[in-house]
Length: 398
Figure 1 (cartoon, rainbow, N blue to C red):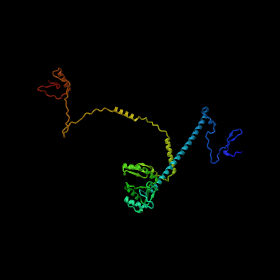
Figure 2 (figure 1 turned 120 degrees about the vertical axis):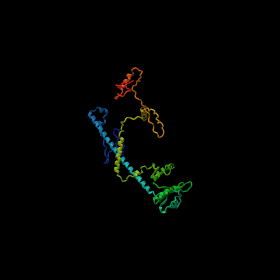
Figure 3 (figure 1 turned 90 degrees about the horizontal axis):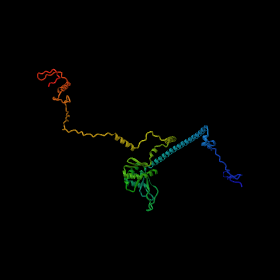
Figure 4 (figure 1 turned 45 degrees about the vertical axis):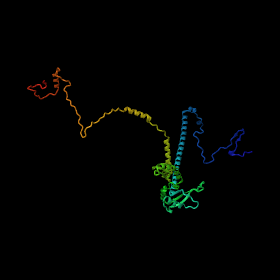
Protein backbone atom coordinates (compact mmCIF):
# COMPACT_ATOMS: atom_id res chain seq x y z
CA UNK A 1 0.00 0.00 0.00
CA UNK A 2 1.37 3.30 -1.01
CA UNK A 3 2.05 5.83 1.70
CA UNK A 4 -0.49 8.62 1.55
CA UNK A 5 1.61 11.02 3.64
CA UNK A 6 4.01 13.07 1.61
CA UNK A 7 5.99 16.19 2.09
CA UNK A 8 7.25 17.14 5.53
CA UNK A 9 4.81 14.76 7.26
CA UNK A 10 6.18 11.74 5.39
CA UNK A 11 7.63 9.03 7.69
CA UNK A 12 11.22 7.86 7.59
CA UNK A 13 11.88 5.59 4.63
CA UNK A 14 14.15 2.54 4.83
CA UNK A 15 16.94 1.88 2.39
CA UNK A 16 17.98 -1.43 0.92
CA UNK A 17 20.56 -2.07 3.61
CA UNK A 18 17.88 -1.87 6.32
CA UNK A 19 18.90 1.50 7.69
CA UNK A 20 16.37 4.28 7.96
CA UNK A 21 16.98 7.54 6.31
CA UNK A 22 15.29 10.92 6.68
CA UNK A 23 13.34 11.76 3.59
CA UNK A 24 12.23 15.17 4.92
CA UNK A 25 12.96 17.84 2.40
CA UNK A 26 15.29 20.68 3.28
CA UNK A 27 13.83 24.08 4.05
CA UNK A 28 14.47 26.81 1.51
CA UNK A 29 13.64 30.50 1.42
CA UNK A 30 10.35 30.88 -0.44
CA UNK A 31 9.90 34.63 -0.07
CA UNK A 32 11.49 37.20 -2.32
CA UNK A 33 12.26 39.42 0.69
CA UNK A 34 14.21 36.70 2.49
CA UNK A 35 17.84 37.70 2.89
CA UNK A 36 20.38 35.03 3.81
CA UNK A 37 22.36 35.65 6.95
CA UNK A 38 25.86 36.94 6.45
CA UNK A 39 28.36 34.18 7.26
CA UNK A 40 31.05 34.52 9.86
CA UNK A 41 34.33 35.91 8.46
CA UNK A 42 36.04 32.57 9.13
CA UNK A 43 33.05 30.30 8.59
CA UNK A 44 34.18 27.29 6.54
CA UNK A 45 37.84 28.15 7.01
CA UNK A 46 39.04 24.76 8.16
CA UNK A 47 42.59 25.97 8.59
CA UNK A 48 41.47 28.73 10.98
CA UNK A 49 38.97 26.61 12.90
CA UNK A 50 41.44 23.78 13.39
CA UNK A 51 44.20 26.08 14.53
CA UNK A 52 45.14 25.39 18.11
CA UNK A 53 47.69 26.93 20.41
CA UNK A 54 50.30 24.34 19.51
CA UNK A 55 49.77 24.87 15.82
CA UNK A 56 49.91 28.62 16.30
CA UNK A 57 53.33 28.29 17.89
CA UNK A 58 54.56 26.21 14.96
CA UNK A 59 53.44 28.77 12.37
CA UNK A 60 55.84 31.12 10.75
CA UNK A 61 55.77 34.80 11.61
CA UNK A 62 53.85 35.88 8.52
CA UNK A 63 51.08 33.35 9.12
CA UNK A 64 50.85 34.43 12.77
CA UNK A 65 50.45 38.05 11.73
CA UNK A 66 47.69 37.08 9.32
CA UNK A 67 45.81 35.19 12.02
CA UNK A 68 46.17 38.05 14.48
CA UNK A 69 45.00 40.57 11.90
CA UNK A 70 41.93 38.44 11.13
CA UNK A 71 41.08 38.19 14.82
CA UNK A 72 41.55 41.94 15.33
CA UNK A 73 39.30 42.73 12.39
CA UNK A 74 36.68 40.34 13.77
CA UNK A 75 36.80 42.05 17.15
CA UNK A 76 36.54 45.43 15.47
CA UNK A 77 33.42 44.31 13.62
CA UNK A 78 31.87 43.03 16.84
CA UNK A 79 32.65 46.27 18.65
CA UNK A 80 31.14 48.26 15.81
CA UNK A 81 27.95 46.19 15.96
CA UNK A 82 27.85 46.62 19.74
CA UNK A 83 28.19 50.39 19.39
CA UNK A 84 25.35 50.40 16.88
CA UNK A 85 23.17 48.44 19.28
CA UNK A 86 24.01 50.84 22.10
CA UNK A 87 23.13 53.85 19.97
CA UNK A 88 19.88 52.21 18.93
CA UNK A 89 19.06 51.46 22.57
CA UNK A 90 19.84 55.03 23.66
CA UNK A 91 17.76 56.43 20.82
CA UNK A 92 14.83 54.20 21.76
CA UNK A 93 15.17 55.25 25.39
CA UNK A 94 15.17 58.92 24.37
CA UNK A 95 12.00 58.41 22.32
CA UNK A 96 10.40 56.59 25.26
CA UNK A 97 11.29 59.39 27.69
CA UNK A 98 9.92 62.09 25.39
CA UNK A 99 6.73 60.09 24.83
CA UNK A 100 6.23 59.64 28.57
CA UNK A 101 6.73 63.36 29.14
CA UNK A 102 4.17 64.22 26.46
CA UNK A 103 1.67 61.75 27.93
CA UNK A 104 2.17 63.21 31.39
CA UNK A 105 1.58 66.69 29.94
CA UNK A 106 -1.68 65.55 28.33
CA UNK A 107 -2.81 63.88 31.57
CA UNK A 108 -2.17 66.97 33.67
CA UNK A 109 -3.75 69.23 31.05
CA UNK A 110 -6.92 67.16 31.03
CA UNK A 111 -7.03 67.15 34.85
CA UNK A 112 -6.53 70.90 34.96
CA UNK A 113 -9.26 71.53 32.39
CA UNK A 114 -11.69 69.26 34.25
CA UNK A 115 -10.88 70.93 37.58
CA UNK A 116 -11.50 74.37 36.07
CA UNK A 117 -14.85 73.24 34.70
CA UNK A 118 -15.89 72.04 38.19
CA UNK A 119 -14.83 75.11 40.12
CA UNK A 120 -18.47 76.40 40.29
CA UNK A 121 -19.70 73.16 41.87
CA UNK A 122 -20.29 72.45 45.56
CA UNK A 123 -21.27 69.19 47.24
CA UNK A 124 -23.69 69.34 50.21
CA UNK A 125 -23.96 66.38 52.59
CA UNK A 126 -26.27 65.52 55.47
CA UNK A 127 -29.67 66.20 53.90
CA UNK A 128 -32.36 63.52 54.22
CA UNK A 129 -33.68 62.27 50.93
CA UNK A 130 -37.37 62.16 50.21
CA UNK A 131 -38.64 59.42 47.98
CA UNK A 132 -40.48 60.82 44.99
CA UNK A 133 -40.49 64.44 43.98
CA UNK A 134 -37.94 66.61 45.70
CA UNK A 135 -36.96 70.22 45.12
CA UNK A 136 -33.19 70.24 45.74
CA UNK A 137 -32.88 73.89 44.73
CA UNK A 138 -35.42 75.04 47.31
CA UNK A 139 -33.77 72.84 49.96
CA UNK A 140 -30.38 74.45 49.36
CA UNK A 141 -31.80 77.99 49.42
CA UNK A 142 -33.52 77.36 52.76
CA UNK A 143 -30.35 75.80 54.16
CA UNK A 144 -28.19 78.78 53.15
CA UNK A 145 -30.65 81.20 54.73
CA UNK A 146 -31.13 79.33 58.01
CA UNK A 147 -27.67 77.88 58.66
CA UNK A 148 -25.21 80.23 56.92
CA UNK A 149 -27.19 83.48 57.10
CA UNK A 150 -26.76 84.03 53.36
CA UNK A 151 -29.36 85.24 50.92
CA UNK A 152 -28.84 84.07 47.34
CA UNK A 153 -31.29 84.53 44.53
CA UNK A 154 -32.87 81.64 42.73
CA UNK A 155 -31.11 82.62 39.52
CA UNK A 156 -27.70 82.12 41.22
CA UNK A 157 -28.21 78.34 41.35
CA UNK A 158 -27.87 76.82 37.89
CA UNK A 159 -28.58 73.23 38.92
CA UNK A 160 -29.07 71.17 42.08
CA UNK A 161 -29.42 67.38 42.00
CA UNK A 162 -28.65 64.22 43.93
CA UNK A 163 -25.52 62.25 42.98
CA UNK A 164 -24.42 58.71 43.75
CA UNK A 165 -26.39 55.53 44.19
CA UNK A 166 -29.02 54.84 46.80
CA UNK A 167 -27.81 52.82 49.79
CA UNK A 168 -30.46 51.25 52.02
CA UNK A 169 -29.43 50.69 55.63
CA UNK A 170 -30.41 47.14 56.63
CA UNK A 171 -30.81 47.90 60.34
CA UNK A 172 -33.26 50.78 60.02
CA UNK A 173 -34.66 49.84 56.62
CA UNK A 174 -34.44 53.47 55.50
CA UNK A 175 -32.63 55.12 52.64
CA UNK A 176 -29.50 57.07 53.48
CA UNK A 177 -29.54 60.59 52.08
CA UNK A 178 -27.32 61.07 49.06
CA UNK A 179 -25.18 64.15 48.47
CA UNK A 180 -26.53 67.14 46.56
CA UNK A 181 -24.43 68.59 43.75
CA UNK A 182 -25.06 72.32 43.32
CA UNK A 183 -23.80 74.32 40.34
CA UNK A 184 -23.61 78.09 40.95
CA UNK A 185 -23.50 80.82 38.37
CA UNK A 186 -20.52 82.75 39.79
CA UNK A 187 -17.32 81.52 41.50
CA UNK A 188 -17.69 84.34 44.03
CA UNK A 189 -20.75 82.62 45.49
CA UNK A 190 -18.66 79.47 45.88
CA UNK A 191 -15.98 81.33 47.82
CA UNK A 192 -18.54 83.06 50.07
CA UNK A 193 -20.23 79.77 50.92
CA UNK A 194 -16.89 78.07 51.68
CA UNK A 195 -15.86 80.96 53.94
CA UNK A 196 -19.12 80.59 55.90
CA UNK A 197 -18.83 76.80 56.15
CA UNK A 198 -17.08 77.15 59.53
CA UNK A 199 -20.54 77.86 61.04
CA UNK A 200 -21.44 74.21 60.45
CA UNK A 201 -18.98 72.97 63.06
CA UNK A 202 -20.40 70.30 65.39
CA UNK A 203 -23.29 69.61 63.01
CA UNK A 204 -24.07 66.71 60.67
CA UNK A 205 -23.94 68.95 57.58
CA UNK A 206 -20.92 69.27 55.33
CA UNK A 207 -19.85 71.31 52.30
CA UNK A 208 -16.93 70.51 50.00
CA UNK A 209 -15.63 71.50 46.59
CA UNK A 210 -15.97 69.29 43.53
CA UNK A 211 -12.70 67.94 42.07
CA UNK A 212 -11.80 65.29 39.49
CA UNK A 213 -11.57 61.75 40.80
CA UNK A 214 -7.74 61.59 40.78
CA UNK A 215 -7.37 64.86 42.70
CA UNK A 216 -10.20 63.95 45.08
CA UNK A 217 -8.54 60.63 45.98
CA UNK A 218 -5.19 62.35 46.56
CA UNK A 219 -6.74 64.97 48.86
CA UNK A 220 -8.58 62.22 50.72
CA UNK A 221 -5.22 60.53 51.34
CA UNK A 222 -3.84 63.76 52.84
CA UNK A 223 -6.88 64.39 55.04
CA UNK A 224 -5.67 62.51 58.19
CA UNK A 225 -2.36 64.38 58.12
CA UNK A 226 -4.22 67.64 57.54
CA UNK A 227 -6.38 67.13 60.64
CA UNK A 228 -3.39 66.17 62.79
CA UNK A 229 -1.46 69.24 61.64
CA UNK A 230 -4.41 71.54 62.41
CA UNK A 231 -4.66 70.17 65.93
CA UNK A 232 -0.93 70.67 66.46
CA UNK A 233 -0.26 74.03 64.75
CA UNK A 234 -3.70 75.62 64.55
CA UNK A 235 -6.17 76.10 61.72
CA UNK A 236 -4.63 79.38 60.51
CA UNK A 237 -1.16 77.88 59.97
CA UNK A 238 -2.22 74.76 58.03
CA UNK A 239 -3.65 74.81 54.50
CA UNK A 240 -4.54 72.31 51.80
CA UNK A 241 -3.20 73.57 48.48
CA UNK A 242 -4.35 72.66 44.98
CA UNK A 243 -4.17 70.02 43.63
CA UNK A 244 -3.06 67.97 46.68
CA UNK A 245 -0.38 69.51 48.90
CA UNK A 246 -0.13 70.08 52.65
CA UNK A 247 1.33 73.41 53.78
CA UNK A 248 2.36 74.32 57.34
CA UNK A 249 3.45 77.91 58.10
CA UNK A 250 3.72 78.60 54.37
CA UNK A 251 6.05 75.64 53.71
CA UNK A 252 4.93 72.58 51.75
CA UNK A 253 5.69 69.46 53.78
CA UNK A 254 4.02 66.92 51.47
CA UNK A 255 2.96 67.16 47.84
CA UNK A 256 1.34 64.29 45.93
CA UNK A 257 1.76 66.15 42.60
CA UNK A 258 5.30 67.55 42.91
CA UNK A 259 5.77 68.15 39.16
CA UNK A 260 2.32 69.66 38.55
CA UNK A 261 3.35 73.22 37.69
CA UNK A 262 6.57 72.29 35.87
CA UNK A 263 4.73 69.83 33.59
CA UNK A 264 1.88 72.24 32.83
CA UNK A 265 4.40 74.83 31.63
CA UNK A 266 5.35 72.47 28.79
CA UNK A 267 4.13 72.83 25.21
CA UNK A 268 1.99 70.30 23.37
CA UNK A 269 3.16 71.65 20.01
CA UNK A 270 6.92 71.34 20.54
CA UNK A 271 9.33 69.81 18.03
CA UNK A 272 9.47 66.14 18.94
CA UNK A 273 12.54 65.37 16.81
CA UNK A 274 14.65 68.07 18.46
CA UNK A 275 13.53 66.94 21.92
CA UNK A 276 14.49 63.36 21.08
CA UNK A 277 17.92 64.50 19.86
CA UNK A 278 18.51 66.52 23.01
CA UNK A 279 17.47 63.61 25.18
CA UNK A 280 19.70 61.24 23.19
CA UNK A 281 22.72 63.51 23.62
CA UNK A 282 22.09 63.78 27.35
CA UNK A 283 21.78 60.00 27.78
CA UNK A 284 24.96 59.42 25.75
CA UNK A 285 26.88 62.00 27.77
CA UNK A 286 25.69 60.51 31.06
CA UNK A 287 26.76 57.04 29.93
CA UNK A 288 30.18 58.32 28.86
CA UNK A 289 30.70 59.95 32.25
CA UNK A 290 29.61 56.84 34.13
CA UNK A 291 31.88 54.60 32.00
CA UNK A 292 35.01 56.60 32.82
CA UNK A 293 37.24 55.07 35.53
CA UNK A 294 37.39 56.99 38.79
CA UNK A 295 40.23 59.49 39.02
CA UNK A 296 42.96 58.65 41.48
CA UNK A 297 43.75 61.52 43.80
CA UNK A 298 47.39 62.61 43.96
CA UNK A 299 47.03 64.06 47.44
CA UNK A 300 48.57 62.12 50.32
CA UNK A 301 46.14 60.10 52.38
CA UNK A 302 44.62 62.07 55.18
CA UNK A 303 45.06 60.88 58.71
CA UNK A 304 42.05 60.12 60.87
CA UNK A 305 40.53 63.06 62.63
CA UNK A 306 41.30 61.69 66.05
CA UNK A 307 45.03 61.29 65.27
CA UNK A 308 45.29 64.77 63.76
CA UNK A 309 43.55 66.32 66.74
CA UNK A 310 45.92 64.58 69.17
CA UNK A 311 49.00 65.69 67.23
CA UNK A 312 47.82 69.28 66.92
CA UNK A 313 47.04 69.38 70.63
CA UNK A 314 50.51 68.08 71.51
CA UNK A 315 52.17 70.62 69.20
CA UNK A 316 50.19 73.45 70.76
CA UNK A 317 51.24 72.35 74.23
CA UNK A 318 54.92 72.17 73.26
CA UNK A 319 54.91 75.58 71.57
CA UNK A 320 53.00 77.34 74.32
CA UNK A 321 55.26 79.61 76.45
CA UNK A 322 54.98 79.60 80.22
CA UNK A 323 53.52 82.91 81.29
CA UNK A 324 54.94 84.43 84.46
CA UNK A 325 52.40 85.60 87.01
CA UNK A 326 51.80 89.32 86.77
CA UNK A 327 52.52 91.40 89.83
CA UNK A 328 49.69 93.57 91.06
CA UNK A 329 50.25 97.18 90.03
CA UNK A 330 47.88 99.17 92.14
CA UNK A 331 48.13 102.95 92.05
CA UNK A 332 48.24 104.60 95.48
CA UNK A 333 45.17 106.46 96.48
CA UNK A 334 45.42 110.27 96.51
CA UNK A 335 43.09 113.03 97.55
CA UNK A 336 40.47 113.99 95.03
CA UNK A 337 41.47 116.89 92.80
CA UNK A 338 45.25 116.71 93.42
CA UNK A 339 47.79 115.53 90.91
CA UNK A 340 50.25 112.81 91.89
CA UNK A 341 53.54 114.02 93.32
CA UNK A 342 56.69 113.60 91.29
CA UNK A 343 58.90 110.71 92.35
CA UNK A 344 61.86 111.65 94.52
CA UNK A 345 65.29 111.10 93.03
CA UNK A 346 68.36 110.83 95.23
CA UNK A 347 71.39 112.70 93.84
CA UNK A 348 74.76 111.45 94.88
CA UNK A 349 77.87 113.62 94.68
CA UNK A 350 80.55 112.10 92.50
CA UNK A 351 83.49 110.96 94.62
CA UNK A 352 86.95 111.75 93.42
CA UNK A 353 88.36 108.44 94.44
CA UNK A 354 87.00 105.17 95.60
CA UNK A 355 89.85 104.96 98.21
CA UNK A 356 89.11 106.67 101.49
CA UNK A 357 92.04 108.95 102.34
CA UNK A 358 93.17 109.66 105.83
CA UNK A 359 95.75 112.18 107.07
CA UNK A 360 97.22 109.62 109.37
CA UNK A 361 98.16 107.27 106.55
CA UNK A 362 101.66 107.57 105.06
CA UNK A 363 101.85 109.09 101.59
CA UNK A 364 98.73 111.12 102.15
CA UNK A 365 100.05 114.25 100.47
CA UNK A 366 101.26 112.31 97.43
CA UNK A 367 97.91 110.67 96.81
CA UNK A 368 96.09 113.94 97.24
CA UNK A 369 98.50 115.57 94.84
CA UNK A 370 97.82 112.87 92.22
CA UNK A 371 94.08 113.23 92.64
CA UNK A 372 94.16 117.00 92.31
CA UNK A 373 96.43 116.83 89.29
CA UNK A 374 93.77 114.79 87.47
CA UNK A 375 91.19 117.51 88.12
CA UNK A 376 90.62 120.48 85.79
CA UNK A 377 93.37 123.09 86.28
CA UNK A 378 92.30 126.55 87.50
CA UNK A 379 93.53 129.21 85.10
CA UNK A 380 92.85 132.24 87.33
CA UNK A 381 94.86 132.25 90.56
CA UNK A 382 93.01 133.07 93.72
CA UNK A 383 94.55 134.74 96.71
CA UNK A 384 95.28 132.51 99.66
CA UNK A 385 94.28 133.27 103.17
CA UNK A 386 96.46 135.85 104.80
CA UNK A 387 99.47 137.33 103.08
CA UNK A 388 100.65 134.06 101.61
CA UNK A 389 101.01 133.97 97.84
CA UNK A 390 101.11 130.63 96.08
CA UNK A 391 103.11 130.52 92.92
CA UNK A 392 102.04 126.97 91.98
CA UNK A 393 98.25 126.85 91.75
CA UNK A 394 98.17 123.05 91.78
CA UNK A 395 99.86 122.83 95.16
CA UNK A 396 97.76 122.07 98.15
CA UNK A 397 98.06 124.10 101.30
CA UNK A 398 97.84 122.13 104.51
